[in-house]
Amino acid sequence: MSKSDYLEAQLINHVLRGTAYSSPTAVYAALYTAAPTDAGGGTEVSGGSYVRQQVTFSTPSGGETSNTAEVIFPLATADWGTLVAVGIFDAVSAGNLLYWANLNASRTILTNDQFRFPASQLIVQED
Image (cartoon, rainbow, N blue to C red; front, side, top):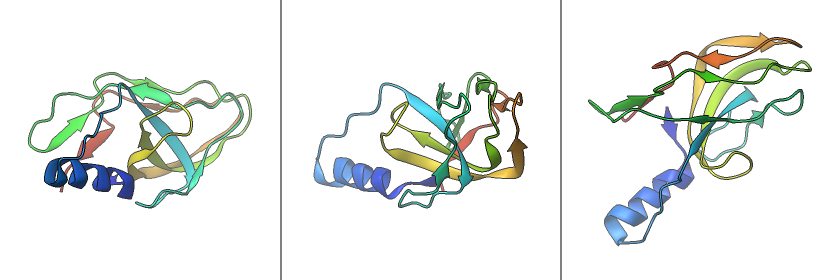
């Protein structure tokens, strides 16, 4: 996953400039039909019962961490479109993009479909 410009600035300021950075109390996975960039943007899914889902990550090892449990999005009550990317945010709505990545394979979510990340499949790895 790529770090967002926001997170890069926060970490540089915290580590090298002594500026306080408060880690979020929870982080949330977001799904995109048009991928964001490090600067943000993209097109996050909206409507059809979509809501970001809270994710708990494992203790880092070897420069990476992954979701400790399955991340299950709600059953779509309308078409969500073709999912191409995932983002990790510091809030259930709005908030700041922390990390993002393209999905290994795009997937179209139609009414009554459900999207999920099995445990250990949402991986954040540092370069």
